[in-house]
Length: 89
Image (cartoon, rainbow, N blue to C red; front, side):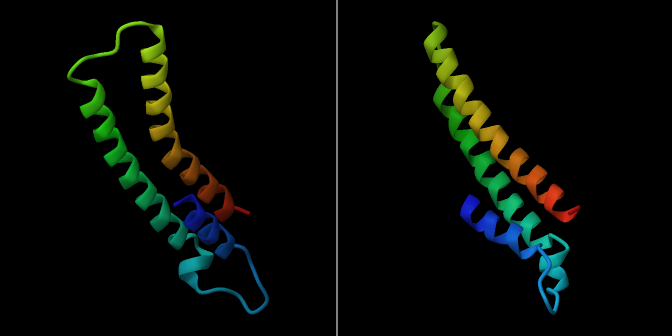
């Protein structure tokens, strides 16, 4: 999905002759960000189903669970920030 997002980000850049509003305004990028967020929500549900029945015991399982949770949450946030910054260039 980040490969598709990189294409959407590139479409925001100006070119000779201009781009269609959908691409130039970053709307296409926001569509990709939304898809990443939906995938992250599904991954969050899977994370919950994995760790909710029996919470981890010990430091290493908590580090693993926290790393997964951070990776799930940060992807749509990073994509949104990158798309927002690309729109403002």
